[in-house]
Amino acid sequence: MAVTANGGMEMPSWFDILDFDWRTREDEAGMRKTITSLGTFLDSEVAAGIPANRIVLGGFSQGGAISLLTALTSDKKLGGVTVLSGWLPLHQKIKSMVTSNNVTTPLFWGHGEDDPLVEFDMGVRSVEFLKKEFSIPTADPESPEKGGLMFNSYEDLPHSTSNEELRDLKEWLKKVLPNA
Image 1 (cartoon, helix red, strand yellow):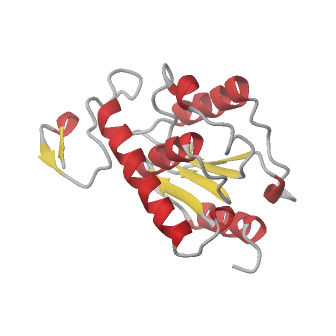
Image 2 (image 1 turned 180 degrees about the vertical axis):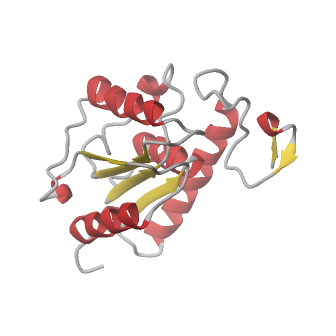
């Protein structure tokens, strides 16, 4: 996909990045198109016999943002959501888009404190918004399968993942989807 903020250069992308300052313009039409595509994918997985509550939707950066949007607007109660170095887009419109299905779904959020692209503060503000506007509780680290948001920060981590973050995600997944 041609990415506007990258001079129109073709690169892997779930939607157009209009500006690398995520707080400015957003490609709402592109995001909605991707949400619809992921919703269709979820429908096909459920039709194939996978219970929705055994599906964890997640991604890194844009993938995390679109996974979060898809889960919050889904008509299916998912098993979990993961966001790595992501953010909550469409702050101005999200309230009218959200269904109640996944507000208490287990949510793992990992973010590097030295992320220069999706700044750490953007992740923190997104988490605070979710907690305030949708009353999403903080997850109990010992039993995240009961629901809520688990936010993990990682020192010296730029816009990337780390072994520590992936270990934390693995442990969270073991609790959220036992016997997987």
